[in-house]
Each structure stands twice: as structure tokens, then as C-alpha cells.
Length: 444
Image (cartoon, rainbow, N blue to C red; front, side, top):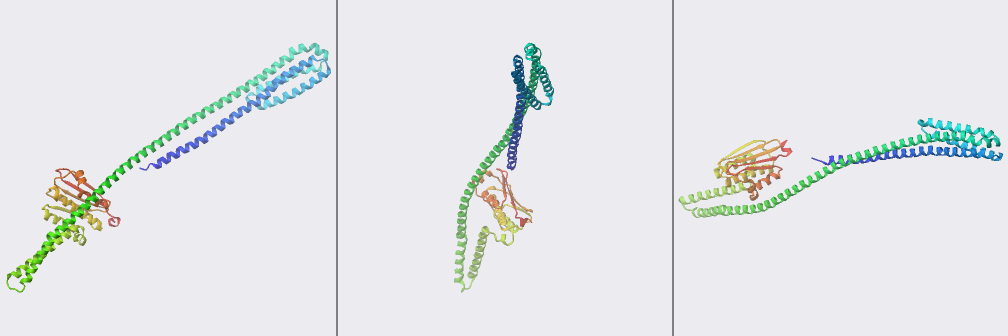
């Protein structure tokens, strides 16, 4: 199963999660910074005019005191001018404070304005007094009018400051909650990223280990196959030399001796051709018999190398001839069953013929069987062959490692993309199965 699409999806999701998390973090951090800046601006916008009002209220009280204590008209005018300037400054700070405060603190700001107006109304009568009246009534007026109204105004300013501080605290708590949500979001995102990254990393590790095991197994198989190929090459070379020695021995011992005997008989015929009697006819008959025997021997050797019937008549007649010849030589009956489509390419015909030949030879040499069954079926896209005997059986792995016959069969079938299976055990007979795929032009 291919795992790279899942790993690609996993890495893509992890990357998308990181990008989206970074974008969300940037957005939320921007919101937090904006809230903090807004709180600082609002606090500064309310604190500055409020501090100014407090200072102006105290300065007004001091100027009124100095005005009441100074009997000169010039000083009174100067004090009056300063008080007017303080009143204008207080009006400006009140307007700025009312603009800065939120709607839920308008009541306190209105109370502050009213207290300041009452404070100024309490001061205005002193500007109509004569110096003697200021000196006589001033101390009592300050204690009963100026100071009480001043304290009321300062108390109103304190209430506005308390409301502003409470509002600032509330907004700071909102920012803290936003920070907590941001921290929780970061934890969830980091946990999800770690989980997804762990899954992707674990899948990558598992897949890598699986590929490493598969590669190691494949390497072992390649080494085994290379060893088998070296063994097969050595065995084939040895078998080729053995076959050549056998062929040379047969040609020398059989064909050579028969040709020598034939030459001698022809010499006898040559000597007796002018005589009368049975000698000439007898030697001529023996020469003819030697010639026929030599032809049969040459034909048998030729059939062992490449049976002409396989090329001339096809696979089925060649297998039937092979079964008859094997039964004639070994006295072991062969039950041959052929069905299906057997009009095959030359390499498939040769492969099946040689596999059957090798299997029959192995049975005759080693199995001690009493009967053999050969079944060949030509299917639509597969050629199936089985060779079964009731012989002594063998240890497949041991014989396969030591013998050439089974390797030879396997290599022939493997060259055509087929599969071979050997089923055998000591004293339980042997079953050879081959499955060979057919080319498309043949199976069609």
C-alpha cells in the first residue's frame, strides 16, 4: 500500500495548521495591543483634565484667599483676572473630561460640573465687596462658603476619578481575559500541532522501517538468487560437459562401432560379389541390418537433443511420443492427459517438453514409482502442467539445494514468467505443478 499520499496530506495539514495558527495569533495579538493602547489613551484623556481640574480648584481657592486678604484695588483687579483665566481653563478641562468619559459615567461628570458651577457662584459675591468688607467678612466667608464648596467640587472630581479608574480596571480585566483566551488558543493549537506532527512522524518512522525491512529482505532474496544463479551456471556448465562426453561416448561406442562393422560387411560384400553361394547374400543382409541399426541410433541421439516431432507435429504428439518412449525404456506406465488450447509459441512448447522430460527422468532415476500421471491444460491466459508419481518422494529443500534438475525446471518456467511448486515428502510421492502465463496474442 502506498503511504506517501497520507504522509503528504499529513504534512500539508500540519503546515496549514501552523500558517492558520500564525495568522490567528497575529490577529488576536493585534486586537490585544489595540485594546491596551485604547485603555492607555482613555486613561490619559480622562486623567489629564481631571488632574487639571483638581489643581485649578486649589489655585482658585488660594487666589480667593489672597483676594480677600489684599485690600488694594490694583491687586484685586489682578487677582480677578487670574480667577477668570482659571475659570476658562476649568471649563476647557470639563469639556475635555466630558468628551473622554464613557456614557455610564456621565452622571458623575455632570455632578462635577454642577459642583464647580456652585463653587464659582459662591465666589462671585466677594468681587462686589469693598476692601473693608473683604477684611471684615473674608475669614468667615472662606470657612462657610469657599472651603465647603471647594470640598464638594473636589469630592465630585474624586468620584469621577474613581469611576474612570473602575472603567480602566474593567477594560484591563477584559484584556486579561483576552490574553487568557489567547494562551488557551496557543495551548490547543500547539497540542494539535504536536499530535499531528507526532502522528506524521510516527507514520514516517513506521513506513521507513517497513521499507528498510523490505529492502533488507529483497537484498537477501537477490543474494540468494545470485547464489542460485552461480550454482546453476556451474551446474549447467558441468551438465553441458557431461552431455558432450555422453554424446561423444555414444557416437564413438555405438555409431562408430556400427559404422566400423558396416564397413567390414561392405568389404566382405565387395570380396564375395563375384562368387556364387549364400555368403554374398548373408553379408549383404547383415550390412543392411547394421545400416538400419545405425540410423535408429542416430535418430535416438537426435531425438534426445531436439525431437523433430515437436517442430513437425506440435506439442501434443511430441508429449505422446515422449510418454511412449519413456514407458518402453523404463517399464513405468505414463497416463498423459491433454486438453484445452495447446497451439503455443515455440518457447512455450520447448519449455513444457523439457520440463516433462526432466520430471520423467528424475522419476526414473530416483523415485522408484509404479505409475506417473502427466496433465496439461491450455487455458485462456494460463498454461497449467502437473506431473505426479507414486514413488518414494524426497526432501524438496535438500534436493533443490544439491541437485540441478529442480533448478533447471524452475529456471525454464521462470524465464516465461511462470511459477513452479514441488510437493513431496519421503514415502509419499511427488507432485510437480507449473503455471505459465500465455502471451496476449495467443490467449486472445
